[in-house]
Image (tube, rainbow, N blue to C red; front, side, top):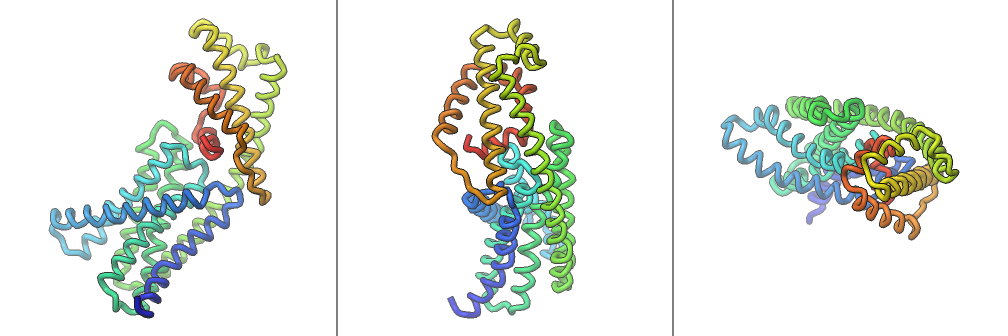
Length: 337
């Protein structure tokens, strides 16, 4: 690789990779592991390859010039494909807060932009340094930022309306498409397009991080107190006098005695693991990395056994006591489920 090509590659890739590294650094609770980021960046790269094939087919189908295609069609298909990775992560309970939503979203865009810029380097190896500055600071950051915004808005709306999945995701998708299309409209003045992206996206993501960090802290404090109270109640033998005990008592008419006992064991295990997960996050925020020990792994094994014993109906019945929203489920996957 010649010096000029190497310089072009560095200018085209370093800004977006550095921005992603900065987001990881700002994540004081270390919600996202580096291994997960590498996997998601690779997913974004695969999406870029799929996008190239789909856009090629769509370009032949719609029969419009490349400029109009890049403004009105490519943003729709590319943001949809990048968004699918985020949707998969949300459905798998791997995203719990706006912070990790933004990081994962930007990671998808980073993988996409990396492949796109390397392909452009292959097509136009002699492009000037000005072109690569625009592609590195403009196009690449736009791809990461657009998907990050989709992830953040999607998660925020899902928290407000958990059952309305498609409707909750549409505003973020629309915003990402409009941002992408607006950037491509401005490519007749690439310096302005790049400046606009740099002015809008970094402050926006910084605000998201600040608000989400506070949200994480509030959730940890409230959740830790609630889980501690629940565990004390179970271990004290006074559970039958509480609303939770009364609810369990009503289940005796719907489930056999051994199943109700398994439900109580499951509630205790779930609460212990939730406390463990919150404790680990608090330690991370203080700068300590706490590994998952054998005792915790053993509890997950017991939990899986109880899940099979209780069955889907039993799990549905106990959900009100376990508060199985997306954050509560996310913390279990973070812990190692």
